[in-house]
Amino acid sequence: MNEVSLSQRLFGLEFKNPVLAASGTFGNGEEFAEFYDVSLLGGFVTKAVTPEARLGNSPPRIIETPSGMLNAIGLQNEGLDAFIKKVIPRISGLDTVVMVNVAGRTEDDYRKVCAGLDRYSAVRAFEINISCPNVKEGGITFGACPESAFSLVQRLREETGKPLIVKLSPMAADIAGVARAVESAGADGVSLINTITGMVIDVNTRRPMLANVTGGLSGPAIRPVAVRMVYEASRSVSIPVIGMGGIFCARDALEFIIAGASLVQIGCGMFVKPLLPLEVIAGIREYLVRYGFSSFGEIIGSLQIAED
Image 1 (spheres, rainbow, N blue to C red):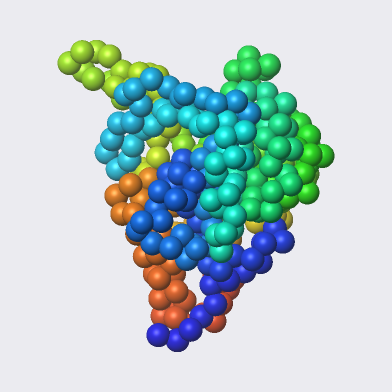
Image 2: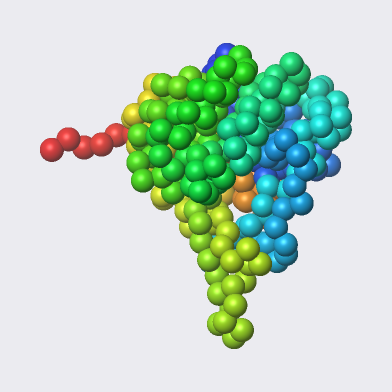
């Protein structure tokens, strides 16, 4: 096979390939180290970090659905101080881009995490989860409207010079409008989509299958929705877009890339195939060779639409 380049420079960072592991499905990297060298990836996103430790939701909190799964983990993590003490030393030597997923209930929560991690070189970028409920706004998510998303990102931009990648909520009424808002507030990129809220009921007991009642739907069932939203967002902003949602093979990843994504993230597919990211990397390279492309950048946003 002829050699083709999968590398690119985005957000001021060098990515050796476009495949990243998504937050919440890859731990903090070490969980998958027994399967392969995680430095083979373009990067990965850590579990969400909040200022204080969170126990998460009560079980059951994961349920399989046709072509997907619902989860209601509840952003379980040990908090900022524990992340600095335990995780930073372990990720410092990795030869790949490590992004930290940041979550919270208030703007101040997000600010504390970004400010607390800003000085650590092992943290190359922040992925800001704006699907979290804003307690000061009655539980509405930060990403529900452009105004709240703009306010949060503008404040975080004042706290750090590291790249800010804003993870958009698919529940927003105007995903393109939110993407434009965070771009104008200083975001370096956007990632989408986060999970879609869903529910499963046990008809025998007439009770919800998840203790939290609802959860986030991920997997192949949401991929067409995710590809559409990546297409809309990429046409609305000039900053790079990271696509995710139901990637289970290289063909799935290529849909996002052709729609306009510069990078992709793989999530629940790794629960089925731990080696899936490596298969996707190999599959993208094979596609470039088969169709005569010399570099990965040539296919980003290359969707062909027939004119009337």
